[in-house]
Length: 259
Image (cartoon, rainbow, N blue to C red; front, side):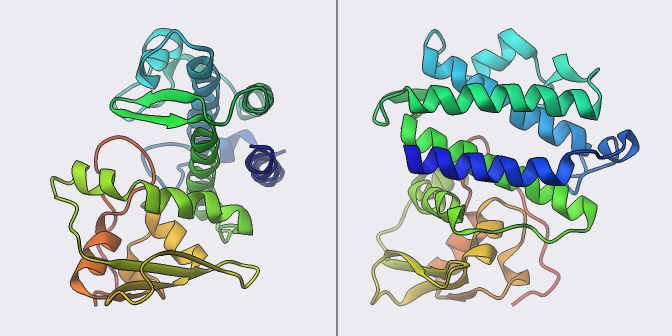
């Protein structure tokens, strides 16, 4: 747990450095998500950092229960109670929530079961990975809006882990059965180290950089617009539906370079 929390703190500091001091006009400009402003991206992250602390504390059976009762949300989970905050105020609020979250994770048994989404409980350790993944996913929207390259460090392994761990759910939410077809995922971390899952001799294979696969897994890029090598019908299908986060199946932009 300490390692994941350390990674989470590092990612938070990275995003903080990008956002700190932005003028209000930029905070209120559209993010690459298009449905949210940059400020709303961070408010969503902060609200669900808060919700994670409440879920660990008990009393709720689903994270949506926290949002329904304590801060409200619209159809796309914009936390409605905080719309009046300025960008600077949003930063202060996020800093408070993320600090509480880190302390809570460190005080929690990593194996404790947290009932996050309906039918998808997870360990506290996996929830910490999920908070890191969600922060990185929304930071990609912010980086894209600001014309910056997404920052990818070796701590992206939390997102890679969830891309594989959540594979059964990705098929389920798309109305598909998880096949028995062997699959191998092998990507290169920024450090040059390989991160692998699956069966090395599988005919269906996905390989490339951790950056490309992570962008695909959080539904921010179409795999056909990356340099990933995706071999085999089942590998192509998985690359098209992979999703690291809970909820309904999320769409991704049509490929600019179909292949």
